[in-house]
Amino acid sequence: MTEQQAMTPAAERVLEVVEQLFYDKGIHAVGVDMIAAEAGVTKKTLYDRFGSKDAIVRLYLERRDARWRDHVTAIVEQPGRFGPRRRVLLMFDALESWMAAENPRGCAFVNALAELPDPDHPARPAIADEKQWVLDYLRQLVRDTGARNPRKLAASLFMLFEGAAVAASLDVVAGAVAGARDAARQLLDAAL
Amino acid sequence: MTEQQAMTPAAERVLEVVEQLFYDKGIHAVGVDMIAAEAGVTKKTLYDRFGSKDAIVRLYLERRDARWRDHVTAIVEQPGRFGPRRRVLLMFDALESWMAAENPRGCAFVNALAELPDPDHPARPAIADEKQWVLDYLRQLVRDTGARNPRKLAASLFMLFEGAAVAASLDVVAGAVAGARDAARQLLDAAL
DNA sequence: TTGACGGTAAACAGATCGGTATAGTACGAC
DNA sequence: GTCGTACTATACCGATCTGTTTACCGTCAA
Image (tube, rainbow over all chains, first blue to last red; front, side, top):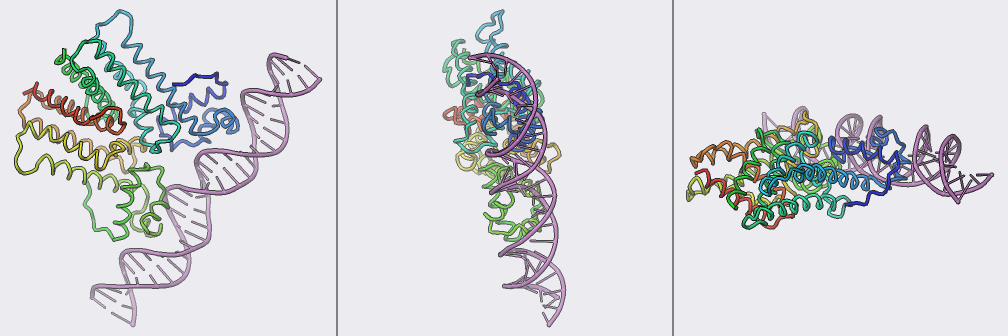
């Protein structure tokens, strides 16, 4: 992640609007002029603060990732202490509320990857980090349940997780995330 | 799908090159000048044949979908007659060979959706059709096994399927598709 | 009080975007 | 031998792309 050096008010406004613009319209479809206009900022300021559009894209993904991790951990690690098995399934509850509230167009990182084929693009590490974090988090949760073959099980849950996000955004399966959670429960219980 | 009216040689060349260009670089990143140059065709010819870039995008997705369906059915319905249970799992074998041969950057339709947020874009039906076909195909295969709750099971397999494609393209899980197939087998056998 | 900092305003580069226009060539069918 | 079709070549359109530049205005701290 990043070390969030203090942003000026104008820079903060830019990062707020790009989160909406990039996600809703796609990265290529949003030009710097639109960003500046929407944030009520001049392009001069924009380039003084960030240096390039690519840098803004990177920050967009890093900030979204941070919000996403906060969302997940707030639900999975909520006090009241659910058991390990329940915590695994809470991951899918977190996904469900995230999809409804912030993710109707699917995973922002998968979408960004589609638009940024260049492996050397400065925003690529942010994409890889988000996915690795989800996988690692699932691995830890699964390990805590004492299930057999936790690495492999976590990988399966990860794929259900990503697939549920795709299915929900495509609106081709009703109750996609709930269905994924049921399948996850079945796989989990079979390994306990 | 489309009724493939005869394409002129130049038009055929255009559709061949855009399949590569759009998939590898993304739709927005490929301009009509690049397409024309790469196909060895003038822009005049390009617009005489297709009318707009959007129409080319639609044809790109429809043709990729056709190739994909051919690939799947050739493997799942190969003579030699596998049983229904085995045919369900053959879907994942088809995905595995497709990923290796043609899909390193993930599902072209998911990627296209990321770049085409406009619900009225002429290429959107092609995206919806491909996903609906996969889901329907899985439903039929599952129904043939006589499994309980075939609709729900097919939805779970669909999500494993899409998630495997994401995981494989992100290269975050080793042997993603094989892992998804194992999970699918487990879910399937539990419902028989 | 001076000068660095964050900012506005607005013009400007050079390239590329999707799409159109004009002019002309090669070729097969009737 | 003429007509229609498919095509090349090239220039152009207005808009938009990322990015730069010049000039100026506050505020606040040393």
